[in-house]
Amino acid sequence: MSLSKENAEARLKARKPVPKPTPAYLPVSGSPLTVDKDLYNGIATAPRSLIEEFTIPIRSGRAWKAPAGSIIRISTPEGPQVGDLNIWNAHNPREKFWAARTKQLHASHVSTGDRLWSCLPFMRPLVTIVGDSLSWYGVDENGGRVHDLLGTGCDGYISSVLSGKGYDFHCRSNLTRAVLPFGLNEGDVHDVINLFQVTGLDEQGRYFMSPCPAERGDYIEFLAEQDVLMALSTCPGGDLSRWGFGADSEKEMIKCCRPLHIQVYKLEDENLLQKNGWKPAEPAPYKGLHGLLVPEGEHDAASVKS
Image (cartoon, rainbow, N blue to C red):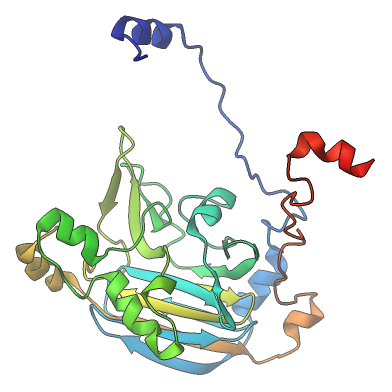
């Protein structure tokens, strides 16, 4: 039965004020959601040595591996540019970044001290953010924030739906090409974190994107909490100051596209992490039985135990 307009208006009028809610996953001291600030600040500032470095051209993608305990720096060498990032366990691509759970555990937009978590049944940090030159951005006048987990990467499928024209250099396509040398394919590409991208929800809950606030040399840094495979796309929307759909938009967006730079470092003191109690992230301790020994459900558990 549909709700009548009069009934809906009455219920709305009778609705009581809702107290300000407490975050569902509020981090507390000692929680896996709360990093040791002294340790991670020490990691971010400790002497380091470069082990790999490259630049990803505009509207392209590249994948690379980084060992546990290394630091990965992604920067904007020529000015504002959005990057779409995927992450996997380097030894098992079934363990991959879980954007939705990360958003629940931390926030819709992440920064220093937040972790990017993997999917089930692993449920452990892939990387921790240890540096962010855009951490000052906060919340702008439209409710926008930077380093987005609300949305996902652009792709040729939705572009063709909205514009009637396909395009092979959207972020999903860039990531697909990037992971092929590592034995992966499009099916392994997953929801991304949109680095350097400002997004939010308007007063009607609709997703919006604003121009990237990064300048030349801005960066975000991650500590690899396990051996990881990372893939990054230099978004064809560039800095999102001219984004749109269709052939005309593609021609306009290329005017605001710039490369992204990747640097992978190792700590010069190879024992620094271990001396401070750090170790590679371990999977969640849940055994994954899912009540299969009690097929009728929890109400039948007592009879099984007896």
